[in-house]
Length: 261
Image (cartoon, rainbow, N blue to C red; front, side):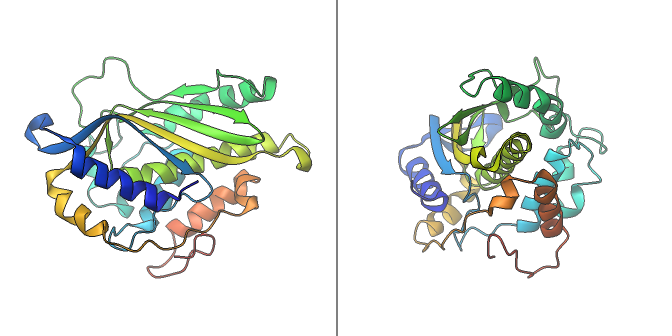
């Protein structure tokens, strides 16, 4: 399977080259409808030098989501702009964490009861959302077990390939690592499942005009090697959470040993 960095660059190039011009809320974008990217969830970190990312925020957001948090005060220290999407300055209307954590027991129950189940899904969308600055981009996530691998199918109404996808792929992959760990806690080592593929499908996959020039620079980048996440990360939920917390709380410039930044 092609690695995430090259898959991402292909998506960027496709949108810049073939995307239609549309302007939701008056903001010009190039957009391709109903586009899917496929990612190896054991290599979930984008490694394109010209796309500068905050790896501390990446880990902080994953930890925040997987603990079911929706508070501004617990995520704002890692992203100075994120608080602007809260309606009241205290919580986020569309936060993924509370919805995911509330439905995780159902996911685990379904996959334990029937490894071939097609019903292990959760929803994040809020029906008939009110006027808010934080309408969820993700609608639903479904998991299935096939050939000893856990695959995740994510359906999004809107996916910003520049600002959102690098972080979304990591978050959904870490969620899948957590699901594997919860399943493996009740399995023999020989029967352990591991993270498989992430299929991320968006009704609107797009790039804002403000990011077009930076995106073009990335197309000439030489991607860096991606390192697989270690077995313990998807076998032990407590270890997964401690690693995310460690990266979140690390000093700038510290190496994160399992993705070699």
